[in-house]
Length: 114
Image (tube, rainbow, N blue to C red; front, side, top):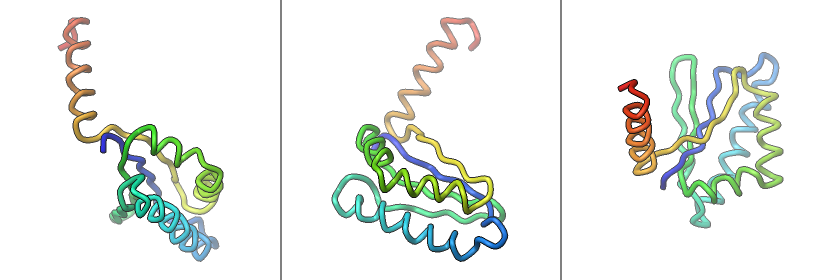
């Protein structure tokens, strides 16, 4: 698994707490179904004081296809409307993360920055 989709947020927008909880359950169900089908890892949630994170891992192309699906796009629209400071990113993990760092270092050396 060389990629992760990482969603972050802080707190629900005041007055939208129940809808935000329902959204979390629905998003977790969508990605858990994909995990059961072997398309990605099970969703992992991390709760910190003030900032939270939710992550799934998998093959970059497969994650992009899952993320671009109509149901996922509807979930993304909800995510932008319910929790504050909501965002998501695709991140390289595992060997892909190591390869990225090595490539970054090589370019830095070529440019005389490292």
